[in-house]
Image 1: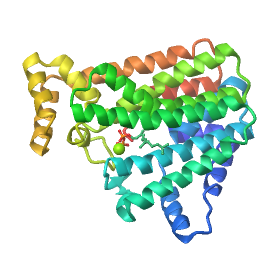
Image 2 (image 1 turned 180 degrees about the vertical axis):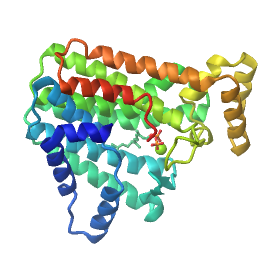
Image 3 (image 1 turned 90 degrees about the vertical axis):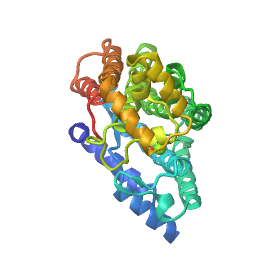
Length: 321
Ligand code: FPP
Ligand code: MG
């Protein structure tokens, strides 16, 4: 699906790919080697796909500034994952060892800083300061999201409201910046900006909800170990769904044991999730978010790009990677 959209974006996508790879050349051998590894094991590039597609849907074009924003978005995303794998002490990502495990946590953090600096170098040259503002807000949100998540994990008592706030900060804020930057780049109207913001909000929330469901889905989750969130004491959509579906006594017991999780506890939670059909409940919650994203696009005129935006939102509910 993402590939199909990237093909539709044609030359704009090729420009993005070239500029993204080119922005990471370095004369320092360690940087060059680490960057090469990260480029070779990159992800789906979902966020820059949205950036270019939003620009196409609003104006039919993707010019240099929009491509710069798409590159900055992917650079920031990669930097945040480098830092996140240190925070989470993750050994693998996308089925390959993390930078922190291949080199060291220090190297991973510095590499993240480097990618972040490359993103800022692109953004600072864009005359429309709304772009720099939205990305700076997002950087603050990413760090705040991680902090709120840690705070809730230590307390062990995340509510649904806390959860929605955490995922907005740690994930949605970058989707929002990626798509608003595109809208600013093509001089979108106030109404169009508001449509894009609503769409980005629901897509971002849905993306992270699906990510959190994959952590409970050993059959679907490719390249990532499952049950990690429970071990890190993170209460996410599947557990919140279990609390909504199971009797109070079950929820109370799980919340109590959540403060001291181990592999046996993960097994027990997975059993209760299956017993009370909590994943179906979670999927319903996720699909409601996707529907709201699609509805947000209603005022935009019909086009192939808009259809792709609708399908991309739909993909958030079913993606397995
Ligand atoms: C992945 O979440 C992590 C994020 C979406 C954000 C991480 C942000 C930071 C560590 C703050 C630092 C920010 C910058 C700009 C360098 P996850 O752990 O739930 O997902 P995962 O399963 O993919 O690891
Ligand atoms: Mg992580």
